[in-house]
Length: 568
Image (tube, rainbow, N blue to C red; front, side, top):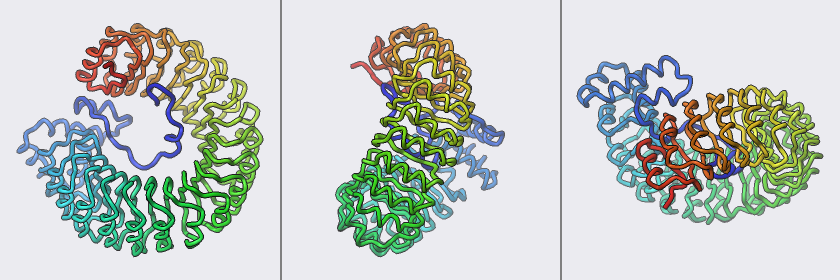
């Protein structure tokens, strides 16, 4: 969770895709500790990697020669996952028959690494957040004539010249250029020649212009297309969408798109995911939306839409996910939506002008798994509307009028995993109703009026992995109760000025703890010994503490901990 404040709610709205290993482990053996519930095969693979990683290059090459191809691939992936792969090791895999290679920011990949990849067998290559890769590396990637899936996401040093080098990859179906900020419209001339592309992401390629995007008009097989946060794009360039009649997924969020754009576009009868967040659309688009009969996922957050827009959505009976956060939708619009679109699994109403009347009508949303009511006028009375939502997994009630009395409606939500109660009207008493939730993994009580007593109430919630309590009322006694939460990985107890070194010392009983925020507590340099007892700690917040810069730097170097809030 957050280090000095509650996590930004917008970052909670969607969870996509893959597990990405970003934080380096201190030793290869630590990999066994960091991954929970490893099966026997995984344990054996990691032990093999520990042994072979310590062997010389010749010994590793000899060992791999005797391995069957599937096991050789598994060993390679384990080296990557534990972030123990080196350039010397990689050269021993250059003849392996790997179909997929995925490098992320935790590994110091450079252009030279790309020379040793087994391009003859590669179908999928992911280079995500690899800042050491430049246009020179793309000359090696150009050897991958069989590549169908290439991700260069956040490879910020690749330019349009690098794209020109991979223009020979005629078999590409998927290309991800997200956050490749040096790519210009000139680079899209190369992409336009990749006629088999079905998925293209240009998110945050902020130099792209209308002319460049229009060059893509011949990519008629496009199924998924994203130009999110390409601020220079207007309706003129986005008319290229008229060539993509078979689109399934479209993201034009934070572009210059307006309602007028859709007058020149087809009905997109196959479209199932549409993101227009932060664009200049309005209620007049509603009628066009009602004809997108296949639509399942819609995001119009931060748009100037009102109840009249939402009224058209009632025609889309199969809608499953809707994000209306930061719009002008009121109770009337929400009631219309939830009364007709009863298959909803995701609903975000953050900062909408709604209250209990809207929430009470959610009684029929039996499939709902995610609900965000942050910054609305919802009170405990309205929560009667979610009594039938037994499948809820995420419930965000930050800055609402919910009180302790309302939490009784959550008692039977056995699947609830994430609960945000960052509101001053919640106190110790309310925690009695949620203490027995068997699946609760993440609990945000950032601004709630919680004392040591409240922590005692939830101390047996063994499923908890993340806890945030910044009430200012906790003492060292609360640390004794927190120590019972053996699965805790993230703990934010900042702003609690009565917590001292003695309290932090008790946290040594939490071996899984990876993130700890002690900002504005009473700790000093003597706390460093206690922190060394936390073997998996990766991130430490110490802003506003009496911890010297020397002690902070010692923690950062000796424990390889990312210390946030360093003194100058």
